[in-house]
Image (cartoon, rainbow, N blue to C red; front, side):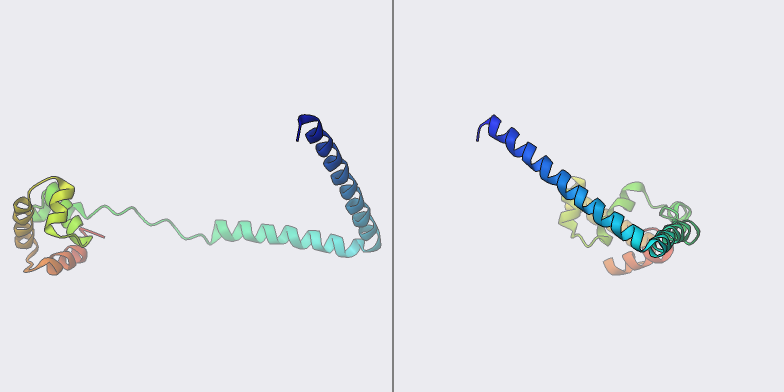
Length: 141
């Protein structure tokens, strides 16, 4: 289609839309004159609905939880280093030693050393014990 054809189609479309709008307005106008009480009741009900939703959201909205801070007092008292804390979070995410080593760009032996220190500091024997103990103390989420 050329540009002249598009303009003609747009003009016809606009004319049809205007006609449809006029017919809808006449239908609404007829309805409004035949049932004004019902329309006013509907508008009042819609206003109260909007007010109720607004007040419900303002009054009954749940308070936002405090951001998780990782219980820094316990971390400091146990002497857990920032790197050990990162290893503990990776451990809690279910990653293997090799995966943790790749993500932190260290050797698997370094991860094993960090884990051994974490086990000692948390009084854990295995991985799940360390994660459970850290969650109990609020160190990790």
